[in-house]
Image (cartoon, rainbow over all chains, first blue to last red):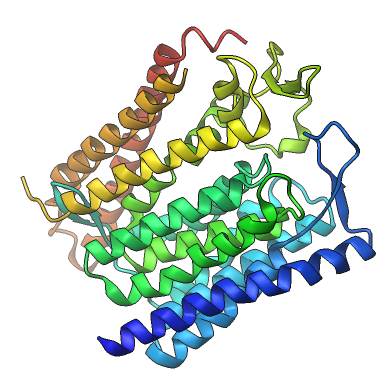
Amino acid sequence: MIELVISAIISCILAFFVVYFTTPPLIKILEKNNFTVKDMNKKENVMVARPGGISIILGIIVSEIVLYGFFQLNEILAIIITTTAAFLIGYVDDRKVMGGWFKPVTLAIAALPIIFFGTYDSDLAFPLFGDVQIPLLYLGLIIFMIPITGNTINSIDVLNGVASGFMIIASFTLSICLFILQNYEIAIISLPLGFVSLAFYKYHKMPSKIFPGDSGALTFGAMYGVIAIVGGVEIIAAIALLPAVINSFLFLSSVKRIVEHRQIKGKPVEHTDDFKLKATNDKTAPVTLVRLILAGGSLTEKQVGFVIFKLAIFSGILAIVTAFLMGVSL
Amino acid sequence: MKSGLYGFLFAMWILIIIGGGIMVVLLGPFSIQQYGDFHWIIASGIKVTIALILVVIWIMILSKLKNWIFRKELKF
């Protein structure tokens, strides 16, 4: 028990401070090399460094390697390899504009270490009703899960601080659920994701000094997906992620095809004269979570972010209730 | 609007729990014995098909629910 506590404390401190101390020099290096993009939601011409995925993956790798020193679990290796692969995929997309197929296909390949290491249980656990054994279907679920979680987090990375703030809430919720289910080792392995997100949020929150980019968003999403699989909490993880799932669902059900955001011509959101955000009436634009939030009236970028966080907390509570319901059988 | 979003989240949660129940009740006890060594592959194939049908039904219900909850807002 003491070993669990010590490993948890060391890995969490490392996860937080590696990101906390490496992000400022990373911002300087990126700005010096002109790796910046315009912040579209600012009145002035504000350029923001991108991608911040480099410090995020560094924090994750360092903390997970330390945890491997304590536990020697294949689950940790699967997390490190799949998350690093997702970071590299995102980094390629940050540097070069790739086709719509690139991220889903390569992220599906990135999920293969989970299968090779055998770090999954093909029983899918549901609250109240128990488990269902789906060996073949579960392999498909693994292949689909990482692209889905990766792209879901990527799709919500539209406003200052939203992706990292959302990830803090979702990942700590997942860790709490793993503790409730007494899956202590995986719970500890999952903690660095929350602390990495927390440290990155300091620089990503409004007004952003750095954007995570595809490399950061895919790193967050892929690690979240792997934890869900190796921890056997797929359903709980999906519930904690529901606001982001709604965003993807609304987008896909309005566009009716898998397409990159940059390929969409219609604008879902525009700015008022005082540079608040407001929903457009453009019928060709996709329906998104932000557009739906703004349908009630214009809001500042910060206000929209807080509405998303409140939704994330609400689904986090539903996820925790679900974790308790896992122990109840009808 | 915001209450509509919370309602939609809650509805999704209920649908997940009900869908899980149907999965466990329908797919859990399902097995085939008369095809020798291949029985688990055939059973898995059938389970995959049923699961996909359930997912499609789930998405259709969710889509209807979305249109109903956000009927005022989804005029754009």
